[in-house]
Length: 132
Image 1 (cartoon, rainbow, N blue to C red):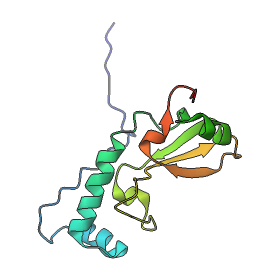
Image 2 (image 1 turned 180 degrees about the vertical axis):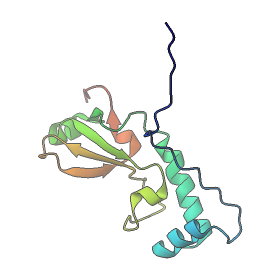
Image 3 (image 1 turned 135 degrees about the vertical axis):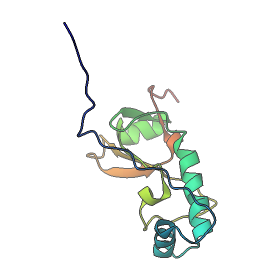
């Protein structure tokens, strides 16, 4: 018996990473920065901060997770991870950036609030039920 495997032609291909070279030739970065009313350098700085923070999310989209504290668990119940925003662009142009606030990069829905959606930090969720 002979078996051959072929790649799935419908499999989505990940877009290449955006590399900032310091010049003004990257239209994507200029467009995104202009939409947010910031410089390209500031956009790149924020994008790197979001990418770094998103690495702390050690769970996947679709998983049911527990909030970090017992009081939050009693208020929200288990939460389903809807999205992990891995780039600054993913947060949307209406995201209010403040340097002294933590980055809210995870979208989730809570079962006790009729599955209303909310934004949270990457460390807000854990796999085990909280005891404190």
